[in-house]
Image 1 (cartoon, helix red, strand yellow):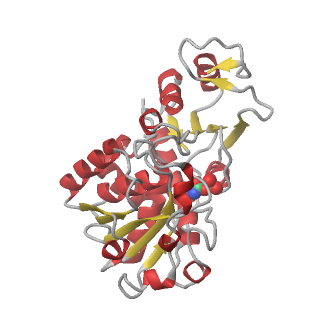
Image 2 (cartoon, rainbow, N blue to C red):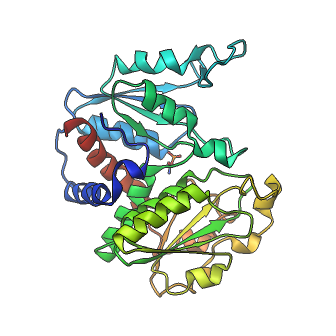
Amino acid sequence: MKHFTSIQDLGPAGVESILAKAAHWKGKFPKHLVDKLLGMVFFNPSLRTRASFEAVLARGGGNAVVLEVGNGVWKLEDRLGAIMDGDRAEHVKEAVPVLARYVDALAVRTFASCADDDADHADPVMNAFRQYSTVPVISMESAREHPCQGLADLLTVQETFGATAKVPVTLTWAPHIKPLPKAVPNSFLLTAAAAGCEIRVAHPKGFELHPSVLEEAKAFAAYTGGSITVTNDQTEALQGSKAVYAKAWGPSTRSGLSAEAVKSEPDWMLTRKHMAKAVKDAIFLHCLPVRRNVEVSDDVLDHPSSRVVDEAENRFHVQRALMDWLLNG
Ligand code: CP
């Protein structure tokens, strides 16, 4: 059975195929999901993910059942062997196979704890859904990855430059008011590597991405002819870049940095002054939501080079292609 909870589930050839299908279907509305039912399980809030998946099912002739865990739905336990004497009334061992009896696929959103990078990278809740589901599982962001976002990001790069191979792209860390998960930067890195980009990752010391993600991305890049450079020098990473992706994430839990460290580098907030170090007309990317004038300045977000709304629209297009791949073969 197919699942899509990681870019590894597609690999470089699959990424290319999904981007091609998504681009081909733009402006068309095939009824490719008639009578299909998607169960959407949210452990965490959303705007784009929820709306775009519901739109994919409705436009395709199908339907969605939306469950918000802990909000009119039992809180779910995922720990094996847990003594369930707290507020989590149901175990995923029962909940997941039960839901799978009602729907054709299950989509799950479950954020990282940000307390232990190794534990987050084991992706316990998403992997429990994969283990106990009898229908395909699709990630709407998990502790390790946000692969639908990565595909939407790379579709935006492909549309802008006509291709993804060898396009110089920069992922630059941004300040925030609190530590955020690393799923979005992980997925941009993995998807850009699978699409053959020349990737620069810039962050202050202590904000390293998990070694397992870097290794996986390097393996993709070796296969596709892309490259990955990691630096603590934001200016160096921006020079010559054609696409600049700003994103806040929390410190590596191995670094010993406190949660307050996310506020300690305000000069990393992306402004037009920073964008000027990239090539002229370089595009700006962000997954949204974005905290204006904390992560990114107004003048970047309001500049014609910002592609953030196109990027969010592309969630719809890549998810249509993914649902077709998962459910129609
Ligand atoms: N980019 C993204 O996943 O947005 P939401 O959190 O609003 O779904």
